[in-house]
Image 1 (cartoon, rainbow, N blue to C red):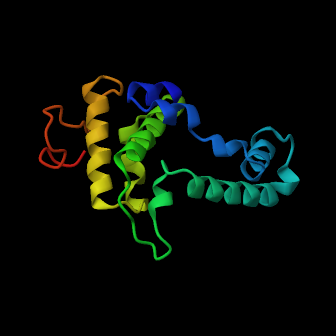
Image 2: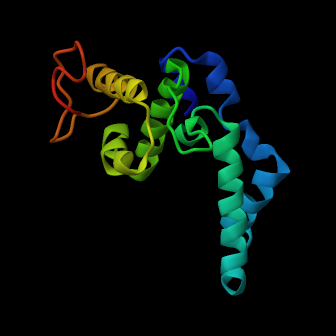
Amino acid sequence: MFIECLRSGLIIEAIMHDWSKLLPSEFFPYASNFYGGDYAHKYFEVKQRVDVAWLYHQRRNKHHWDYWVNSEGVALPMPAKYVKQMVCDWNAMGKVFGDTAKEFYHQKKDSMRLHSSTIEIIEQEILMLVKNARMPAHQDGCSEKGGDAHANGPI
């Protein structure tokens, strides 16, 4: 994630990315879940604590789309720097899990609440990743012709 943000010119974001995970309300539930030993007998208790920690994380970090959904469920526009950071995050996680930011976006976009301007920026950022060869262009590839993401069809 650090390198992805640096490549996108997001220096402060690269340094500060996900620091909220060090807060007790996030750190201890994640530590219990991932490194806590045999919690099979406490599965639901640990899962509930992780779910709450994840909710805290989404609400504290502007690079998560969930942060930009108001109390009425309406998606607000995300500033471009946070959209870029979010796509960098997806790209970095894709390297860990064997997919790409584009594939993640295609799999999850129907369950995300995104403002139309946020969608435009996401699609432009994914096109830039493909164009700059930081992400492989897979079978349902983004157009590499440049220009408006919507003019070339959905990514």
